[in-house]
Amino acid sequence: MSDILRVLIIEDSALDAKVLVGLLQNGGYEIDSERVETAPEFSDAIQRRPWDIILADYNLPEFNGPEALLLLQKSERDIPFIVISGGIGEDLAVQIMKSGAHDYLMKGNLARLVPAVAREVREARERTMRREAESALHAANEQMRIAHEIQQRLFPKEAPKLEGFDIAGLTQSADETGGDYFDYISMPNGCLGLVVGDVTGHGIGPALLMAETRAYLRILASHSNDVGHILTEANRVLCEDIDEERYVTMLFVMLDPAARTMCFASAGHPPGFWLDAEGKSKPDLRRTGIPLGLRPDTEYAASDSLTLEAGDLLALMSDGVEESLSAEDELFGKDRILKIFRDGQGGAAEKIVAALHDAGHAHLAADIQPDDYTTIVLQVV
Image (tube, rainbow, N blue to C red; front, side, top):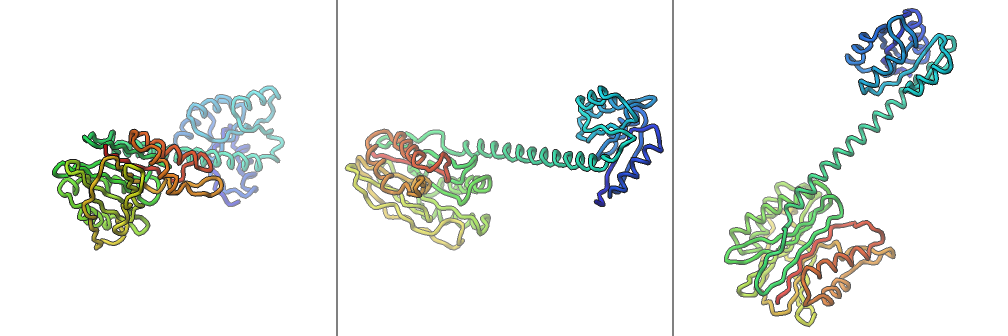
């Protein structure tokens, strides 16, 4: 075996202790041992250094096995404890095993010593590995919980109230933390930015990148109404921070409530839907450039100013709902999305968003959401 085995021996006979060490050495172990005879010596030994196993005589002049077992349990150390006695009754042997000893051997029959020690050391190490894994999992879950709480605070608590407009937004993450992003951003001259973004991947990394992107956009949009310039500058700074495996798609719409117009820029994001009062499709808000974070020199241009009319419905979405798969591997698809918008058009924007996400969940093959769902709906009243 050639393992170094750290053995604490509770034994008043140096010869008996030597016999135990010899048997273990013959079994292939390299032994690092210490012999103790009293409770203070035992307590000092288990506090002073780690042990792989404890071999304890049942009766000593000033100490005994049950007392040692109780001291070990109070120390909360997980060390296998094997009782080795010259001869105690079966009742005492059963009693100490019920109290927590891992095995019991007779000094006159130590053939089982090496396999018993090997078994208990192996199981103790497995328990340690299991505890470490559970501790690591708990720590990771706690980190994810905290990240989830922080991320939820970054999403808008409520939609802005604008005369002549009904606005609602919602994000539902596939994991504890997601890579989707939506926001309402106050812009100069009373304009409002409506933003939906999608960072590649899920988990803490994309969530942090989403938070960074949000911060850049809010700073840039507070000083400019040029959505193309905003995406251009955001892309430039993000390219310095994003590795090759990450990028951000984004659709940024600037709404001018007073003029009842909008313009947009899209960094590789799925098209936004635009319906008139009769539910007929107007031109989609299509991509105007590649995703953010790929090339620092990319220039994004804003669309022309587009007039919004009474009854219009505008929807900005990530691709989560559209790409949801049924048990038959059928995509939820654009047609189902448009039907939900048309059926809900004229009702509350909040209900339309909820109906869309509910339909996406109902379409899934199992009760497992594979991607984030994020939607903003704006209706012109």
